[in-house]
Length: 633
Image (cartoon, rainbow, N blue to C red; front, side, top):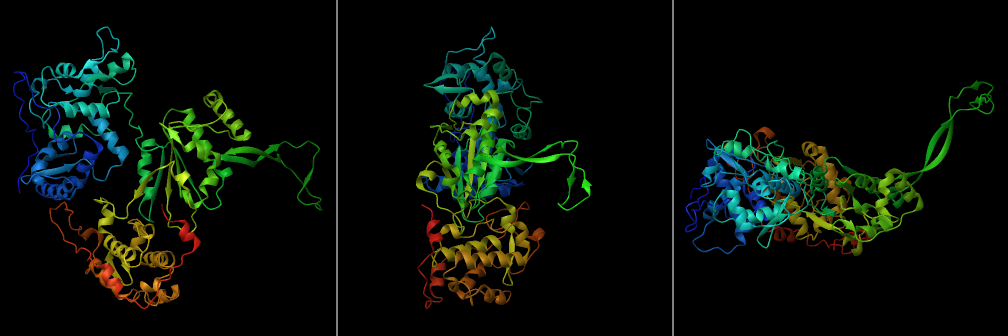
C-alpha cells in the first residue's frame, strides 16, 4: 500500500513569478465546500487509534465514497494516490493530526450541517501561515499571518476610517503575503463562500456590509497566543470552536442558521427524527418553543384563545360565608374568587413575540405534524409559510383579540406589523412527520410545497453511534445483533411482502434501555410487526399468527417465525452472547486496539427465500382508508 505522510504541502513552488514566490496558502485538492467537507467526514475515522490502522481505514473508506465511485479516473490513478493530495487539505482544515504514531480525529460523531458550517467559518477566521502543512511563508515565523484578518486590514485606512472602494484581488494578495504566491484560487473561493466580512466579485475584493471602524479594528488587531508555527497539536487545538483564540468578530455569528426556515423531517418509525432536530436546535442556544400535535389539537390551541382565569377580591366586612346551604357554622374567606376570561397565546404567537423582541434566531419545533389536521390548525397562518429570504411574502390579519394581545406585549415593537402580521426572517419552524402512524392526517400538496424536507434514512451511511454498532437484542429465545436483525427483517418485508418503506423498522425504534429488556423487545416489536406492519398478511411472517395471543404463547421457543425469515436471520445471530464491555465491532470499523472483527454480512436472496413459504396463503389486497391516506407522495 502506498504510504502518505502527514507533514507538508508537496506542491512545488510555481516557477517564473519572482524570487519572492512562495507556495499555495491552502492545499489545491478541492475547494472548501460542504460537499468536500462531507467527504472528509465520511472517510476519516472518528476515534483515536494507531496511525497504521487509521491509514488502512481511511483508504478503505475513501474507496467506498460516492466521490471515488462516481468519478471517472485515469487508469493510473488509485484511491491512495488521490488521497495523497486530499489529506493535505484535511490536515490544514484541522480535521485530524498525528503525533507519535497516534491518530487524533476532530469529530468523534457525525456533525450536523449547522456544526459543519460553524466549524468552517471558525476555521477561516483562525487559519494562519506558516503552519505544519505548508511550504514557504517562513518570513512570517516570528509573527503569525492570520490570513482572513490580514485581508480585512486592507480596508482600514491610516486615518482610522473604513475604505469603501474594492481592491484588485491579485494586488490584495501580494500585499497580504508580501510577495507573489502559488495558486490562490482555493483561498479566494473560501473567502468568498465563508467570510462574513469579505467577498470577491469580478476579481475585486470588497466588504460585504457596512462595518464600523472599531469592529474592523478589533478583527485586525488580534494576535495569536503562544504561537509555534510547526506544532501540530497546537495547530489542531487552535481550531476548536469553543476556543478563545479567535478574532473578536461581531459579524461572525456562531449561531448563524444555515438550515431552511420551514423544515419538515420525515421517515419511518425509529429513524431518529426528534433526535436529529434536538442536535440541530443547539444552534439556537435554547431559544426555541416545542409543541406536539395530536388528533384533537386545534387552531385555538396553536394560535391562542380565551381561557378562564381566576381573580380574587376582598369580601365586604359584613359578608358571612357558609360551607353548605344548611350549615350554621360560618367560615372565613380571605379573598373571594372571581372567574374572568383573558386571551392566552398559543405556541405560534409565543414564538412570534420572541422573534420580534430580539433579532436573534428563534425556533418553533412541531413534533408529529400530521397527527393533527395541520391545515386546520394553521388556518390563515398557512399563507405566511410562503417566504422569500425568510420573510413571509404575504401578510394576514388575525382576530382582534390576538392582535390586541400582540400590541400589548410588544409595545413599540408592534409597529413592525402595521396592521397585518407576517413571519420574520429570524423565526424558524421545523417539524417532524411519521406517515406510518395509524391515526395521521394527509398533508395536501399546497401545504407540503411550502416546506423544505429531509428524509431520515433507515440505514444511515457511516453510522457513528457506538451503541448501534454493538447493540444486541434477545428475540424469541435467540440473541441477535440489533442492526443486522432489523436490516434483514426490513429486506424481507419490503421485498416479497411489499411493505411500504415508511413502515419498516428504523435504527432507533428500540431505545437503549428497551434493547436490554427482553420483555420490551417482545411486546413492542411484535405488536408493531403484527398489528401495524403486517395487519393483513401476518401469516406470511409468523407461525400461528392468527391472533396476537397465539404468537405470545409460542414466544421464547424459537418457533414464532416462518422458516424463510428464520433462515435469513441466522446471519444476525450472536453465537456466544457477550457483554457490552467485550463486544466486538462490526466489520469495516477499526477498534482502538487496531484489531478488526469480521461480522457475517446478510445474505442476499430474501425475495427467493420468502417466495417459497406459504404460497397457499393469499395476500389480502384491500387496505383501509387510513393506510391509503398516509402514503407519501
